Amino acid sequence: MKNKLILAAIASACATSAFAQSSVTLYGLIDEGFDYTNNVGGSHVYEMASGYAQGSRWGLKGSEDLGGGLKAIFQIESGFNVNTGKLAQGGLGFGRQAYVGIESERYGTVTFGRQYDSVVDYLAQTTANGNWGGYLFSHPFDNDNTDNTFRVNNTVKYASPDLAGFQFGGAYSFSNSTGFANNRQLSVGVQYTYGGLLVAAAYLNADNPGATSGGAIAGSSSTIAADANFQSKRLRVFGAGVNYTVGAATVGFVYTHTDLSNPTANVAYLSALESIEPTSGALAGGTLTRLKYQNFELNGKYQFTSAFFVGAQYVYTLGNYDATTGSVRPKIHSVGLMADYNLSKRTDVYVQGAFQMIAGDTTGSALDQAYVPGAQDLSSSSRQLLVRAAIRHTF
Image (cartoon, rainbow, N blue to C red; front, side, top):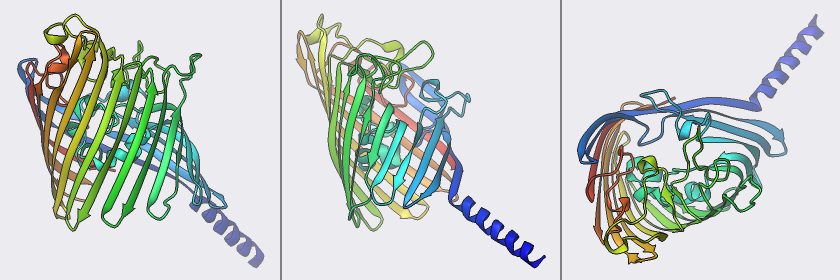
């Protein structure tokens, strides 16, 4: 009897140990609020809207200890609209993330599936929109993807361990088509942290983004909306940013450069694939051959108490639009403000506002009309304001 009790105790201990080496976590976030936009096609809009400071989501993530400092890991994450219950990311079941991989304490992590690119992983955290502000604080049309308008499919990603404050990584996304380069993506990034200092940089190149529905950056199909922010022959993004925290204050500066060759449409923001071809003005009758955006962002946040912060952002975007009939250089000014108060560790309320104004040259196309990311559609003028009050809960 004594031996049986000993064996039972050993078996129980082994089972507990085995269970402790594997874990699966269910998690989620719900962001719901009320928006006012002063100009959508010439009219005021009042609406309930989901997922702005952060996208509403639920997911599962887990790991299994393989021994020798190795773990098998996975994550699947689904976005949704609180108001309608519909799936986000164009109706994908796990449109935010879906990957599996191996993590090594010494050598880093390799993952496979639908993931974030290196601009999102490294550079975005230095921006207001990629850190504390969210959707409304995106650069115009999220042209540099720092607010992860698109994820990258068919992706192999590597992320290094922390090496005395340095971390680096890269991602390659297959086109999954007979045209090997038709809708593929490559990105790399690096960051360095020391005390309150964070410095990061990233580069992304995508060939024919949005050209196919099953490629790296998905274009629209009969059942799935597009991931791509623009369709073009080639998309290149590079940039660098720095954040510095002293006590309760954090300040940051970010520069990003986006280059789109032979753009055909803005598919993520303008309704019904609204044309970006010039129809009047200096570029009338021409065809756009290149869109360039240089984004200069200054941001700051002050943590008044452990439960309350206020943040602000200003972005100056210099556009360079080339067409067969000439070139124009519009200037876009974006301002954002946010205040956030935590009711508990898992629930907070916030108010935020964003204003955009377009000045300088005009293209004679939809690109001349202001658009705050998150608004229902374009303004009828060169200005637009959106104000939001919301509650956010995590679980």
